[in-house]
Length: 425
Ligand code: FNR
Image (cartoon, rainbow, N blue to C red):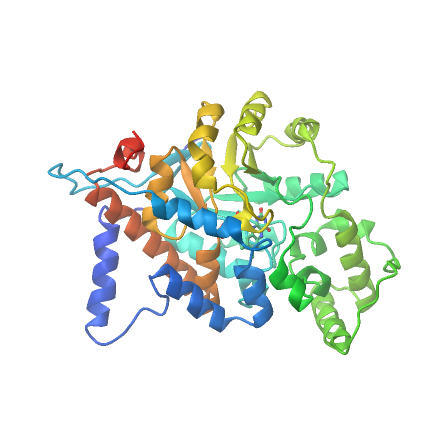
């Protein structure tokens, strides 16, 4: 793949963003999207329904993994250098054949219609306006073609959940190729859904209401495979909420030219086929035959799996624990990063799970990540102010990353290394 022209990035994005906020603030205006990560989450939570807040913010079990992810960032400390002329900075990194404006992309996050009606499309537009890459979710609320059409030349990747129907996988991958995706990111940590008490206690799974199924409902192969009627699972919904569910399913069905009965069959077919617990390394070799695109494995955590991934010739790794949503009580991704990078050799490692600020991005790069994926923070921006909210979150992350780099005495994102952190060199 060749490098393409990138959006012009200011060389002082941190200062520019600060001045934009402070000068506007001189008239009394406050940012709609808080820059403090804790406030961002709190305000977004109050802008969401109870079910959306549980689904987006929550994690697996006691949420110990989520806490570990945050603790790992908080316990790392910079040791800045001074007197090094940091007047001009370059935040860009080279990643999968392309130069990215800043060292992060927006993570694939499903069911965004729970927080905003424009959902993935608003995110795609913000990604375009800020020149930041976006990984389309397999559980998106807007079909990938519509998002891709809004993104111009800005990088987009496609995240795949490997369905038990290989023809659906092939169809999704070839659609991703046609809409300009530059990589396929296979998520490996969700072959089964984690145990999520916040959602369980509300008895709420969005997919059963037809949400987050846009990639499937718009897919000709999936549609051709839907049964005439939903198979009887022997479990029946209880309570009057069934009326609301039927209403929502009908409304969603109309968007895709499907009746209520067909929607029920689609949901049942999705539930029966969306993932494969028997997924194994031979499938990765098969994926290589299905596509010419680079392949990244997401949700890999163990250094030995990183070594296996290298043997299988993958193009990149995303060290992720799904933001602590899958296994309760696992290690923070940041704590595993140096060992995974050591086993990955020349293969680039991205990290996600717990990244909340520009300083966090700098810490991940200092410990060997080529770039990071940012998940919940941009969803909070979406909940608060739609496309503009996502753009603000992106600008804030870039600004803080830029200032952290400069104030640590560095001028290039690629200068970050273990020497910048206490006790790591
Ligand atoms: C996710 N994530 C996710 N990952 C994926 O590969 N496909 C998906 O559809 C989703 N959906 C999804 C929904 C919600 C509500 C969340 C919070 C997360 C995981 C996501 O890509 C990423 O790994 C985490 O969000 C990173 O952690 P932080 O940044 O949210 O802490």
